[in-house]
Every structure is written in C-alpha cells, then in structure tokens.
Image (tube, rainbow, N blue to C red):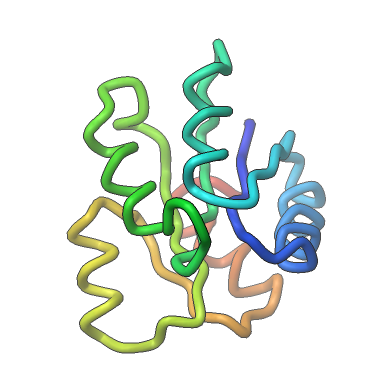
Length: 123
C-alpha cells in the first residue's frame, strides 16, 4: 500500500516514514497541505493513507482534509491527523472534517501501528 506523510517538520516526516516503511508501505512526503494536494492530484495512483499534521504553512492539515474529502478521487483515502493539538474541540473538528483517526504528539510508533490496525491498515 502507498502512503503519504504531510508535516512541515522534516524530523517528524522521517519518524513517521520509518514507522510506515517498517509496515511495508511505499511512502511519499510533503511539507504542507498545498504541496501534498499537488502531488496527490498529479499521481495516477492514489495513496491509501495520509498522515497529516494540523499546523503547517501555506495550507494547514484541516484544510487539506476538507479538500481531500470534497474531491471524489480521494473519498476512500484514510486520513489520520498527527498533531500537537490536544483540545477535544480540535479533535472533533478534525473528525467532522473527514479525518478517520487522530493521534496526539508526542506518540510512539506503537500508537501509530495500533491506530492503523484499528483502521484495518496494519497487521
């Protein structure tokens, strides 16, 4: 399966990529929502999973989730917010926007794997 990590932190992209690599994913990366959307729209094969940070320049994660959910091509993509935003209202906003799961930073790779298992995306 193919996945994308969208985060303005290079270190965070590497950490998430390593976890996904270990699960057998082919992983691409983007530094913000705008870059992610451009890459996703150009790619002939859509990814199955996108891990999205909330706070990024140019286009934040919540806007990316909304735009992806509004695009017929991306309705089946699983979207997981991975963010420092810990308020219940923000979690509700992300889920209402179309995120399938919500992971708060800091996290362990076990948390990522468990959330992906819950979504049927990891063994």
